[in-house]
Length: 285
Length: 264
Image 1 (cartoon, rainbow over the protein chains, first blue to last red):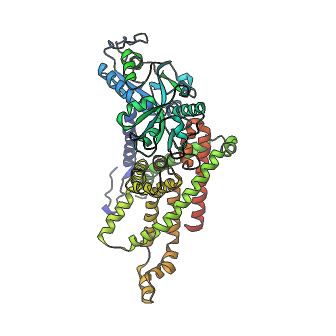
Image 2 (cartoon, one colour; image 1 turned 90 degrees about the vertical axis):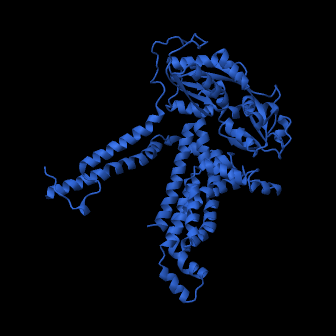
C-alpha cells in the first residue's frame, strides 16, 4: 500500500475516500451545530429533588432547585406582560431558562400541531385553541381577560372619537386578519355596533396591526386594551362602548409534564403573575 | 496502476456525488412533500373560491406591472452599467445588489420609511393627496424593489458578453449608440433579457415580506397569493397547500415556457 507520488498538477483537489468521509463528517457536524441552538424543551425536565412545584402549589416561590428550559409560545398581545413574567420567574428560579416566542394564536396553534417544541401555550381567547391537537394538552386554565380598544396615533389625525368614526372613508382602519383572535373579535364588535369600517389592511397579528398605527400609516386600529397600555405614549386609546365590545378569556395550556413548566404556569396564575398582567391592562378571568 | 486510477476516479465521484445528491434531496424533497400532501380531490374546489381568484388576479396584475417596470427602467440601467468603466460604476453595482441580499421584511420597512405617510417622499406626496401604503401600487413597488436587481444583474451580464467589435463596426458605419442598441445590441441580448425577466417575475410572484410590511394585507387590493397562503395556513392548511400547488404550477409553466422559447 505504497501511495504513489502524484504530480501536483494532477492531484485531485479532494483526495480519495478519506476526504469523502471527512466531507460527510463536516456536513453532519454542520447540521448538528446549526441544529443545537433549538433544542426541544421537554428533554431537560430537571425534576431532581425539587418536587415543591406541584400543580397545587400556586405560590411557586419556595420551589428551589428547579432546572431546565421552559419554552413558552404566547399570543402577540402577551408580549410585554410575558416578558415581565419571564424576567420575574427567572429571577426566582435561577436554574430555569424561559424561552418565549410570540405570534398570532392561530400561528402558534398551527406550530404546535406541526410539532414545534413547546412547554406552555398561552392564547388569546379559548376559541383559538379549538384547532389544537387535544392529545398534546396536559392541562388548561383561564388566566386573564382582555377587551378590544381603538388605537390611534397620539395626535389622532383623523379625530377618531368612537367606533362609528371608523366607517368614515377618510379614516384608514387596520384590523387583524379574520383568522386570528383579535380579527374575529373585531368583526364581532363591528357586527354588534352595525359599523362597516374602512379597512385598508388586515395584519397577521395584533402587534403588526398596532405597528401600522405606531408608524403613523393608519389612522386607527382595533387592538386589545392591553396593547394600548403596553404601547404607552406611542398610541392613544379610544374606548369601545361596553355593549359593542368583545371580551376574550385567555387560556394557558400546559403541554409538557415537568416541574419547571408546572412552576411557570403556577407562577402566571399566582398573585404575582396576576399583578403583572393587571399592570399591562389584563383583567382577571 | 490502472486500477488505482479508476479507484481515484470512483473516489472523486463519491466525494462530489454524495454532497451533490444531498443538495438535490434538500431542494426536491420539500417540493415532493407538497405534492404528496395535497388532497388532489379537493384541489379544484379549494382553488375555485372568490378569495383565491381575487388573489390570483392581483398576483398576475402586479407581477406583470413589475416585469414591465423592470423592462422599461432596468434595461437602460443595465446597458449603462455594462458600458461604463468609471470607477464609480463598481460602487453603484454593489449598491444595487443590496436589495438582493436584504431580508424582504427590512425592504418593507425601508419602503415604508420612503413612501409611507411620514416617509421621506411619502410625506410630500400625501400633501397632494397621494398615499401609497395599503394600495396595489405599494405591492408593485415592493415587488419591483426586490426583483429589479435580479433583472439588472442578469441583463448586464448578457450585455457585457457582447463582442465590442460589433459596436466598433456599427459606429464606423455611422450608427448612433441608440441605433446600435436598437438594431444590433438588443436583439443579441434578447435571451438574456428573457431570462432576466423570468427571474425577476418569479421573484416578484413569490414576494411576501416586503409586501405584507409595506402594502399590508387586504383582499383584492394587496393580498397576493403568497399572503393568502400565509393567512389560509391558519384557517385551513389544506387550502394553503392547494394554493401553494397553484403557485408552484404557475412558476413551472411560465419558467418552462420562457426556457423553451428563449433560453437554451
